[in-house]
Length: 108
Image 1 (cartoon, rainbow, N blue to C red):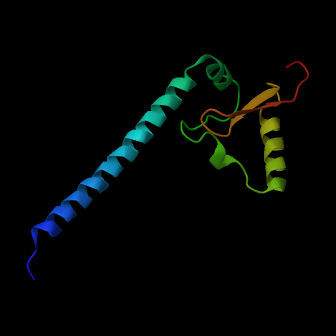
Image 2: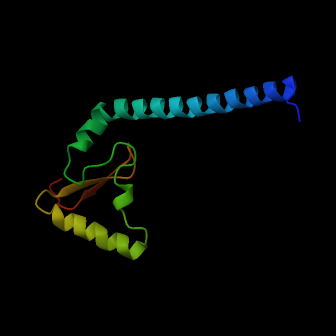
Image 3: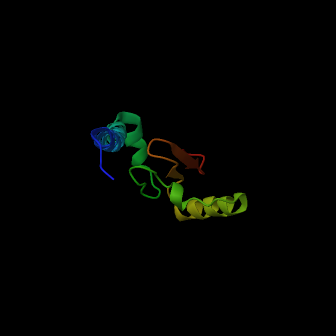
């Protein structure tokens, strides 16, 4: 069976289309990471990052450390509160830019 020019051209077009889509995804992820990095250095988020708590990951925060079941989540929050009891405040990051601040002393 001979390979015709049309088959060769359509295979090349498909290869370049897939390569373009892969490069587009990589470029989009790089831009998203850059935007997150710039936002993290901005005023409000930078102040919240100085609060005591677990150090968050750049892309997904503390979401992998958070329990999935409601009962386990309450127990986990109580553990985090007792770990940072002297500070009176703790910060958990649900994503790169979504802080969840736990306040448990009336001073704050």
